[in-house]
Length: 99
Image: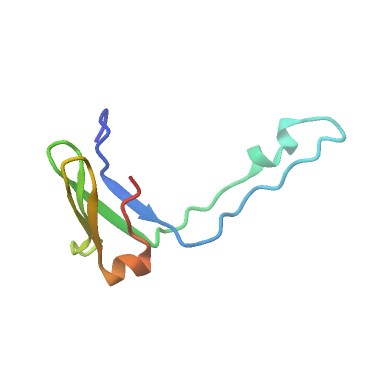
């Protein structure tokens, strides 16, 4: 949520990250030849999207997948020890609580 620390969504990408090559500035630098300024990244769809369901303090209690099914849930003890549960589909899609 804007201006808060409460998580809203999690996205998962299961692909290699493509980096831009390091430029060689042997003939001097010019912004029109800089590969970072010339790079046109192509947006790719996410492999999975999960939505946080948080309590009134902002603590993640559940993550729901695109279909609305619970993919991850947790119960907490007084000082924050979490007992987590993940569904098989959450494990396959790598949906987990990153906090």
